[in-house]
Amino acid sequence: MYYNYNDYMNLSKTDKILLLKDVRGQYRTKSLFYEFRLPDYPYLFTLKDYDLTIDSDSSSDNSSGSSVVPSLRQIYIDLNDPTEAMIATQIFPVWEHWDSMTRLVWFKDLVQTWREELEIKVRADALLQLRLQSQTSTSAAQFLAKGSWKDTKGRPTKAEKERQLKRETLISNEVDELYNILYN
Image 1: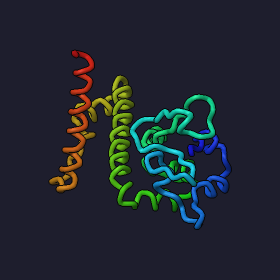
Image 2: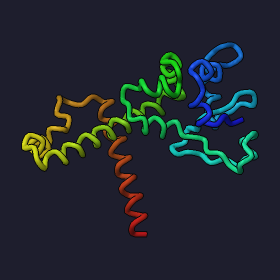
Image 3: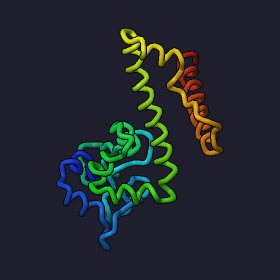
Image 4: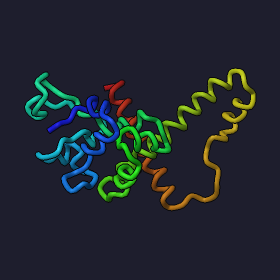
C-alpha cells in the first residue's frame, strides 16, 4: 500500500518515526520502497531515477486514478545538500535512520552515485555563479581562465580513477543521448 508523500511530509516528527518503524520497533529499510513493498507496510518512495506513476489499482486507497511515488534520488538531488542533514531530518526524521540506510549493502552504491551526482551539480552551480561574477570581477575571471576549479592534487588513487571513469561514461552517455534526440 502506498502512503502519500505529501501527507507524510505533513506528519509530525513522532508520527513519521512511527510510520518508519516495523512491529519490532526497528527502522524500516527496503519496505520503504515500491520495489520492495510488503503488504503490511506502506511504501513511500521508488528507487528509480524518476517519480513513478502507478494506477489506483496498485495504490489501494487512492481513488483518483493514479498516484505519483516520488523518487528518493530525485528528492536527494533536489534538496541540494551535500551534508545530507536535510534528508536525514526532513525525509528520515532522525539522523540514525538515514545513517543506517547509507550503510546497507544494497543501498550503499546507490547513495554513493547520488552523492557523486550532487557533487557535480553543486560544482556546476558554483561555476555558473563564477561565470556570472567574471563579467565584473577580474579574480573570478582569472580563476576560470586558469582552470583553478579543477582538482590539481597529486596522483589519483585507483578509486578516484574509477569514479572519474564512471563520470566520463555518464557524461558520454548523456551526450550521445542528446545527440540522438537532436539528430535522429
